Image 1: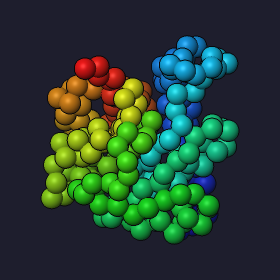
Image 2: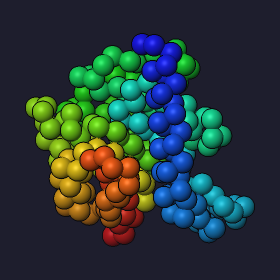
Image 3: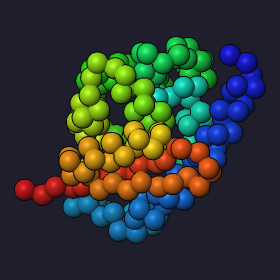
Length: 194
C-alpha cells in the first residue's frame, strides 16, 4: 500500500462524512432526547455514539470522524473476502476485526447506533449467503431508532431497499449527483412499541 492510497482514501471519506453528516444532522440531533429518569441534556444531543464500518478498507471513515472531532466510537470490520487491510487499520490505533458477513457478528444485540457499508452489497451478491441474512443480522445489532448508510451500485441499492422495507425499516435512496452509478441507501430502524 502506497502513502498516496491512504491520502486518496482519506480525502474520499472526508467528503463522504460531510455529505452523510449534512444528510443526517436534522435527524440524529435532538433538542429533546429526554429518557425517563435522565436529567435534561443540553441541546443539541448527538444520538450517534457507536458506529460500525462494515467494509472498512483502510479505516478512512474512522480517520474522517477523528479529524472532524465527532465524538463517536468506530468498529472497523474488514470482510474476509476483501483485501486483508486489518493490520493497516490496527497500526493507526483503530479498533478492527476480520469478519465473514455470512455469519453472525459476535456482539450484543442493539449495540450500534450507525452501520455503514461501502460496496459490501455488491460483494455479498457473489457469496454463499443472501442479502436478507445480512439485513437480519444488521437489524439484530442495530439499536431501535439507529441508522444504516449503504453506498453501492444502483442494482444492489434497489434490492437492498426492498429488503429494508420488508423488515419495516424506513428507507430512502439518494442520488449522489456525481455522475456515477453509485447511490446511497439511508435507513432507520423504527422503535417498535408492544
